[in-house]
Length: 281
Ligand SMILES: Cc1cc2nc3c(=O)[nH]c(=O)nc-3n(C[C@H](O)[C@H](O)[C@H](O)COP(=O)(O)OP(=O)(O)OC[C@H]3O[C@@H](n4cnc5c(N)ncnc54)[C@H](O)[C@@H]3O)c2cc1C
Image 1 (tube, protein in one colour):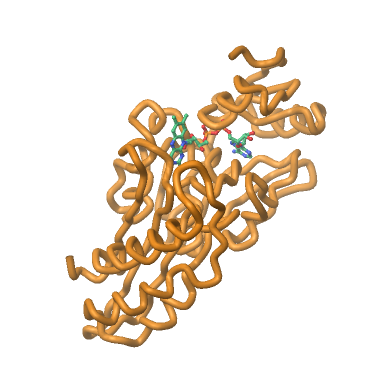
Image 2 (cartoon, helix red, strand yellow):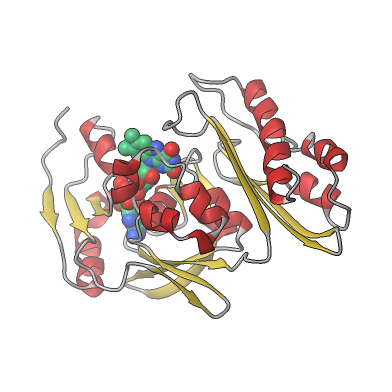
């Protein structure tokens, strides 16, 4: 379908992008890779009157180590994350997004700002102690991952704010696993699980498990983490802990899966992701 008519600008500076966004009011939208926004516009589920394209704004690209963690520009493409093996579970998750065409255009900033609970990167942001930096007409602020995702397609980023960068911890000392279940290899996740495990002297010192599509926002599997912290990483214990993966979740049923089936998937995928992260598989 053809989208409703809209104006388009591509400012050269972040300041111009912010003032264009503010001037356009609620009907103005930022454009990054366009791979979530444009399909919505073509279906006429979104009809912004102004698109503010970020492609010419300098300083929004690339991932670099900074202050013991990673600083990743909002316009960094999924394909670049995928190629950077040092990003561990983030690189692995990015590599499962759709197909090369989508990964070459879609951006980490667009994915996080869109707030789709089926997206792969939000749960990784949660387990990587992540945060985003946003800048608007009122200045700059940082939003922790736990405060970013508010509801289905709803984040705490204000309409006149631009997500400029993403911060994640360096999880270099952690093993990781990423398990995603879908009908076809390039589909969105029915459920996905990201897990990281840090072992010291054959004891799990730290473990974090992130769940995708198990509610309206990405979630941590807190009961699983609690059951494993301080324990030896053996397969039986991991399997028992993974049985608690769906605790406290409220997965929406959809065309692909009932809520119960998603809970089942969460348990199975959590076990597999933890086995990978603990080096047991
Ligand atoms: C066929 C297909 C399959 C896909 N499969 C998957 C999948 O399996 N897993 C997955 O995770 N994703 C998937 N995606 C989505 C893809 O990852 C998108 O690229 C991503 O969700 C949005 O990023 P974008 O850069 O394209 O954002 P855009 O579409 O340009 O923007 C998305 C939203 O975010 C806002 N926005 C963008 N950038 C910023 C910013 N810097 N600051 C504030 N707001 C901003 C826009 O205004 C818009 O509301 C798929 C997409 C397609 C088309």
